[in-house]
Image (cartoon, rainbow, N blue to C red; front, side, top):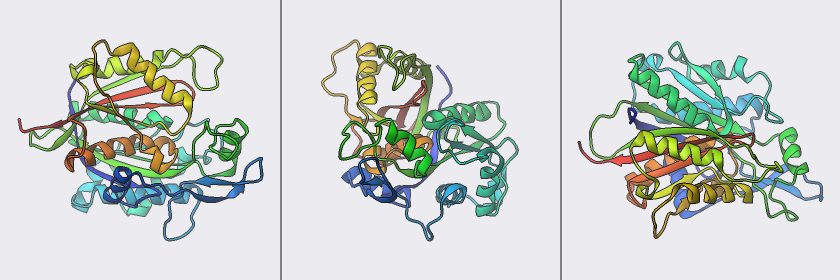
Length: 342
């Protein structure tokens, strides 16, 4: 069993809300807000997307930085500014090889976020370019920093956007966007989120990450190999083993599923391969139905949604299994627990 870490504060910027509270209220009500982009698909229709509306129509690295800064500022709103510099920032972004990714993110984005916030974060701050599983990777790194007493708290943030023509064109040509001619696809989106994590305090009403697991799927989306959900099942087993729990003891799931049949099938197969006792229900929440496909920001969205549901008492229990999947094979799972008083 591994050390748990506590989700102390959250911030979120999505197409349905510019704060964690407003976004999570929209998730609960299943509100979405797709609008027309400037781009047209092969059938001549405007491509729909979940677009974040900020003060100006920024794009590229500027919008990524401003969304991230806004989410971080919300997360740190109760932390004195003089203490921000003691926090390492692990900033999650898309994979380096994702089509249409903003060039040179590693060289510019972290500093741009710091400039927006007029601060400098602690040494050891870094980008985590791992796409949808990036927040899980960053939480594992944060847990190690906290366990080794290298930092009392760590800031995990994520920012991503799929709303560029090279990215949209790539997915549209492969029939992966939801269009009038393709029901097996996702609506692209953009978002940013932030999580302040630290050691558990033992107080009531605290969301803990009790397990983190990883796997690799040998039959990723678009592959001709048979899908058996090997990678996601392994991620489930690893996270549950760290938490000292079995999957039948989890109350519900939250995942990064954004509309493609492949990922829903994978999620079902992974449960079938790991659940060995009868369970009457095991609901699956997917905030992407409101935000669209938000890439690296998906993990922050999932954890923030879990915390809001537990705090507002509309969650289906205290034990949550969260999972994420990249197109090229990496898989991740988190076990989350809303703790009572120690």
